[in-house]
Length: 198
Image (cartoon, rainbow, N blue to C red):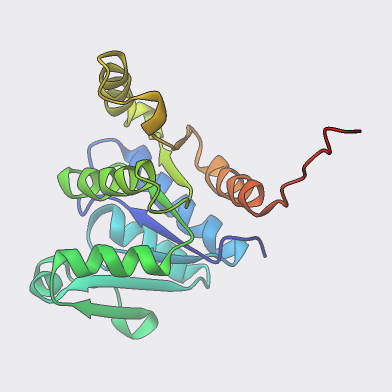
């Protein structure tokens, strides 16, 4: 087992129009299960969230869903008896709980909610509130418009060199876990110093 014990995945409660999105979500769930990595996610049973969680459960993996009480009927939690389902009072607590339970974050395709969750983690990382790896799973170029916007912000001086964003981009689902493990290994590696007198 690697350094990542639990990974939080943000993704859509819809499936999107490209079948590759659902296939990618299922592949990620299977990959996590095979590696012994627990999934932390938004608790929903529809869309990519449901595909991801069900694939992980079917492969014998661990799943922790975190869902606000008001969304339980709307998002129809995935088989609560087969996973840990944490019901929280609001969206703020949902995000905080997911953050606390995760060693890293992955963003699959999704809508405004997925974008908001991803951007919050990017902001917290930018402000040095955490150093957990953040990976954008760029299935069929889904995140390229966001990456272009980030480059545009940088070019216009709104992302300064001293407040750079830290994220990784995986074009293949198979690259997600290796990227996370490499990032965590670099963080945990001992810092070696060289005596300038030598």
